[in-house]
Length: 261
Length: 342
Image (cartoon, rainbow over all chains, first blue to last red; front, side, top):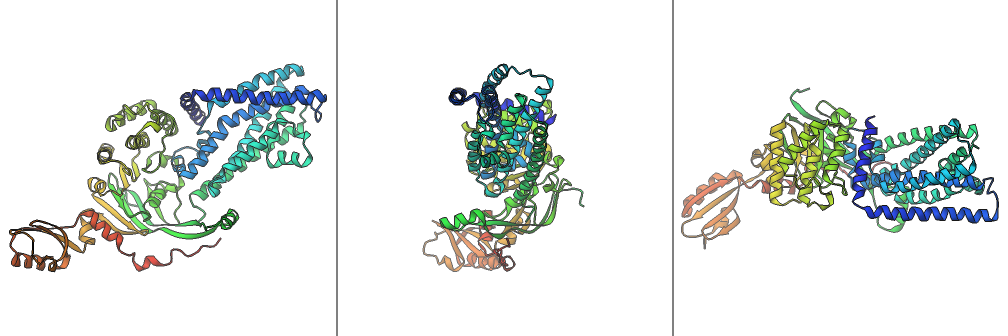
């Protein structure tokens, strides 16, 4: 409850801060629109040649693009700016102010900066998802909705935990911004279902950089094709990564304050 | 346990393991994988206690270990040895109840968010410290009043001058009414007026709330105005802990003698009495070894046509400089650079 209220305060302050830079809204708008056009254009090109892609029908891929924008928007709104800020704090030594606050440092770090205009991606994602669902003619019953929500949540948590672990490396290496850039380019691959990629890349996108769980899995869920084992595996992975990333964060903090010495 | 001591530290030590960076691309590449490290003794077995409501100045040249000590006391660093309690807590356990009652201000670093108005950073701190709304209003009003923040609150931090920013930094750090303040060079880089302003504020806050303050500063004016008691550290060791006024007695091996002469100083063989420090028509300042003060002033009075003579302790700045320019004691040279293991 306390952390929810804290989060709300950060969101409010984020909005106030970003209102100062209204141009950002339009820039993000244009950027998101372009991204979406490219994604949809790509779909159109592919399906002018074939009816299915790696077993995926056009509507299903549309749903995937919706998920891709939805999660991507959340990454760009909260995770990326907060983690970038965190690394900046480590570099400048201002992380000290976070650590002297009477609240969980991981939470503070994870929500400290919110780029509210990036929510445009999420706004764009919603009609795309809706269209896909209508085209699929999917009867999105209660069970499907819950399963979809769960996979989305798990996907988000997996990406968050992964990113937190990457960022935590800043305690040792100080400058790890480049890892973020690598992640964002891997993320781009999540625009397509992982099943279309060669086996090695599929394993990379599933196990090394868990993009698949944040895009492909929720998209299979929304089109009603997810298997129970995938669902359970996704939930288990999300829980495990959340725990491991938290543990790693603690190790990082302990290293930062020199407990190991 | 002493009951009236708020801060109590005993043989506190900190050894840093620092990365050694060699020049050259190849070495830099190698350091990506495996880093060379060495140990640096930043704080070496320091002990002291601070009572409730005291303002204690922490003096030392750059790299003496002041900031490291403050960081250990504010829970940011684990010590390598010794113990410390503040308000009955072990700082580095970062107990929330402890963190809510202390604050850390660093003159060189900002906690205010760059792009948003100052009042919004205050708002974030209110949320983090869970300060009830009425209490928060009261604190903001009081601090606004004491520090003249009224015209600043709505401005984004980036539009503030250095002095304005520092005032807001201090206010942001005090919204939760901490009872222990660690101030690391709170006046650094500020102009004289602003320094005085901040000093007055610290005194005022100390009187109003009875808070305990441990502060470091390079400006002797800060220390003289605020601290009756100082702790001098050098090369991680405590050299002196006591009244500011006792510092000269203890460390200055000389006194300053100011002599006014009736028929001018010209042509007088003054250097035979002591080291000539300043010299203007008819007025001379000499530095004389402490032990010889009495005999030399006797000779001056007897041999010269003196109209006025005063004996003083040298300015505190000179004393400090003198202390720090001396080589560290032999104990301290026990190879602090010994290489550590992996």
